[in-house]
Length: 304
Image (cartoon, rainbow, N blue to C red; front, side):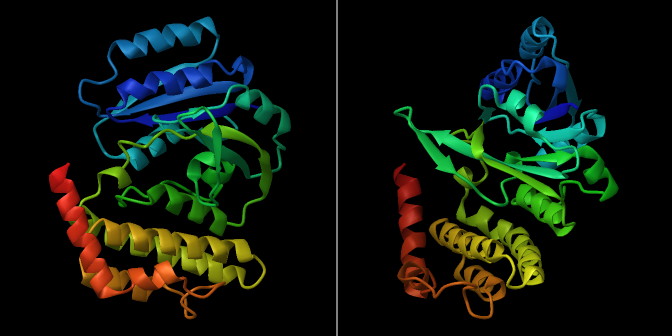
């Protein structure tokens, strides 16, 4: 059994080395291959390819560098998937890393009959302490059986500019996979996400993102409704995602009419599936509060 680790990279040369080395230093050479997909980075990966290839050869771990014109992370992941040979696929982001020893533990615990493996992830704070984090729709904390993805024709949506990774997980869950939970161990190390899409939002960009966000939530809603009362975790996650993105859109200065459209189209019939709206939620749904936040964000960006 082999795990294919697929790492898409776009202008992440400063972080890519750390990410790849976290895989190479895992000590599971016989069961791992690494595929780095350069998504049309400016100047490519250059000398880094040579140094990482030498490091992989010294550890007897297959490492391949693939390149494509800049098409986005989804296209890069799909391209890597086409060339993967492992029984299971692990999509790792270039600005993240994996915990030491993770691959050896996973290879020992994976059951051949499972379609997906759900793991735990974490972030190390500046003081070195580990901060736990988990999300039902975090695509990087799953292993995917390659045959399952092939049979169900599952790929990352290349026409979405945001939430395409969570949409991929939704599509996988809609196929009712056999999932092995090993969340007692945290294998994934989250980076600081300074260059992430969310970190660079502007009011204009948030407006462009709204259609993709709505598309994600409506798909999420169908999955949660299909589960009925059997799985409250899906509905609870829906609630949390709803609150997070209502807050993000408000703080990023999204125009009020789009924010109102998002709120009206996404919310469940009872506004919240599992609980009453909180005071912060009611504030975010107030037009005057939204206008104040938008003004504050504009002033803050100018001062910075």
